[in-house]
Amino acid sequence: MDRTERRLVAILSADVSGYSRLMAEDEDATVRTLTAYRDQIGALVREYRGRVADFPGDNFLAEFPTALGAVQCAIEIQRVLGARNAGLPADRQMKFRMGAHLGDIRVEQDRIYGDGVNVAARLESLAAPGGLCISGAVHEQVHGKLQQACRDLGEQSLKNIARPVRVYRVLVAATDALEVGGSSGPAQSRESDPIRSLAVLPFANLSGAPEHESFADGMTEALINDLAKIRSLRIVSRTSISQYKGVREPLRKLRANCGWME
Image (cartoon, rainbow, N blue to C red):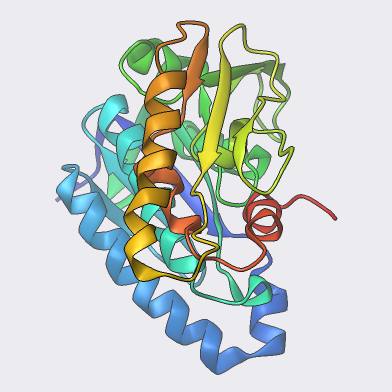
């Protein structure tokens, strides 16, 4: 009996950046982290009505009934794993690169194959650690439906793909869109988007008095709210940037999370 079927789906492909180095430096710790992250990823994929089709080693492949679901899931995975990475030393953080494409696939015994899968994998290779790249086909479906901005990278020639593919970079995290300019306060976007993105790092309570903690939080929130009134600015939510509260050398963490060099 032929169990082969074909269907049009949104494909999310991902792998761990620097996995070989992580394994070489501490195999046990890397396996423990990957196992924990694997469980988290699987739960989020199911939450967004997707299915993990394969998860060999540091790679995973998932399919979704809609492009919006795939992109929203990818963004949430990066957000959740980014928060978990913040609790690890910079050299032990496990960051996934992700690519999403809308295309036709071949399904055999729950495994998926085809040109759509290959395109998603090539898009993944263009993404930064902790980042997400999507095809033009996906962008058409999600445009105007995301809080996150997308940067048009133009048509790209992808390895072993016959035709160029329009690629967009989704500004997943606050740090994707920022040119960091100080230890706290707003930082200006370094992207070429007409709408600039800014983030306000959590203000620190330098007095040491616990009762002043809420005042520092209030100042952060007030500044975010005031900046949000400027239509030409896209303000990163306090929730997205709160993972850096109390972090020693937050700018170093920001650069590390983006893969920036000192």
